[in-house]
Amino acid sequence: MAKEIDAKAYKALVSEVRKDLKQGEGKVVRSERELSEASGVPMNQIGMGIYRAELEADPTLAIKGRDDKALGKAIAVAKDGPQKMRWPRIAVRAGISVGKVQGLYELATGKSPSEAEYSGRGRKINGQNGAAPRTRGTKTTSAAATSRGTSGRRASRSSTKSAPAARGARTRGTRASAKAAANPK
View: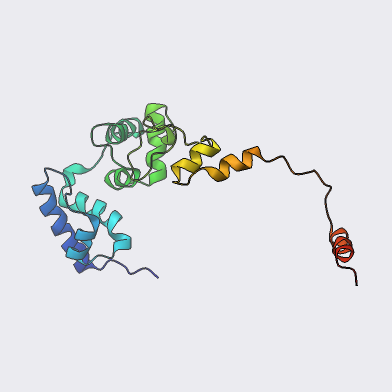
């Protein structure tokens, strides 16, 4: 069961985020772990807590629009513009769900959310931001052996051996009879 954010910890988080927004020119500069330790908000809830605290600390960060079309354009600017925000942060700033945000983005830009520019952490998804598709098994056997630091002798020996003689499928019965024939009493 996840520990809930209590009011005291949330107020401390808003205070810490407000300090960061002043210091970092509108950005939170400290890591999630540092903010969690400073405020007492559990690590498993700090992400969305920071997004909500940003909005409470500086209401001008809210994403607004007269209608769905205008809101979609504002969402597209937040996602594809210089800030390159992630979906959950945009959702909190717009006051709607992530699914609704992605729907409005698609309505405004004509691109599906999966085609949006990647702004997350970790390995880039294939085909986004120039990431080359990942391939496996492209090295030759000898190149693979030398890249692992082995002498490559095993690879060269195995290539000179003749292929083993083809034999039919062996069942338990044929293995048992072969074993009995090999071990006469």
